[in-house]
Image 1 (spheres, rainbow, N blue to C red):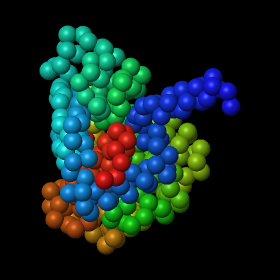
Image 2: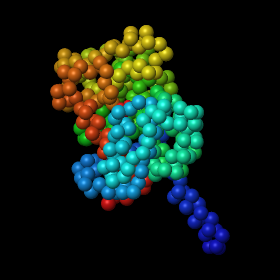
Image 3: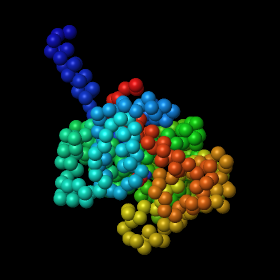
Image 4: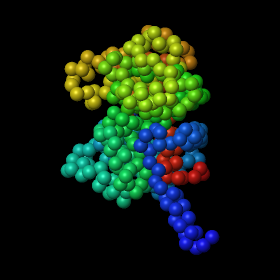
Length: 325
Ligand code: CP
């Protein structure tokens, strides 16, 4: 082989090697990559001390243009648990976005400070724009009503740990299926597993967007039912994924008030569920799950929060290409 061809192959290899990996949508990872990541999260859960220094000297920037409790603090905890450090802002108002700085310019700046970043933004597509201008991996921590891929990794890990398998499950999604980005991401992720069935429980006005029905469910021949009846469908479910009605995405308060309490899961409704059904919720909860349900062993939404830290630790390791210690 001549020298110039060798050089070309070497340069192309380096370019491939240097291609940055981001997580913008749950579909950015293949099902094999997703399963590997969940397996890593499980190993971290079982032996956290082993991973306590794998990110020594690394920094994550949390760029949150929208409110958050779990996602931001979970990313920060994940990086600290791995030995790294945290910088960032928790609202658009406390950053130079308030002075008109673009997402593209902000990420160029952040690339000078941090090794990886997690971005939440009210506008769909903002993390995609950031990834196009970034020198560091960008993680979508929720963009408008679009996607929330790290909540999906959290949900998949929770389901895997509690049910033992991600195949052959009937998943009920209940509440605001129109604006709930966690629902959209979870549907996208679960259609890749075998024999998934969805029961989509919502008021008529808050049904899933058309593109999900046509391009994801119908296109993949997925078995699903759209209904406004919760009790009747409870006995069929392996998982019930409750969601709040997303007040911040409504155009008028009147509609929100009319729809906000469409479904309230209480102890009486839980009697219709099987003993091995689990209730998940991405949180925050408003009214949609009565606090009296919290003591039911099938209510696992706080456990789900803890699993979210392991999922994000695994994700940070994957995107920074940190080898298993
Ligand atoms: N589940 C979730 O995204 O919660 P936060 O809005 O508190 O981050």
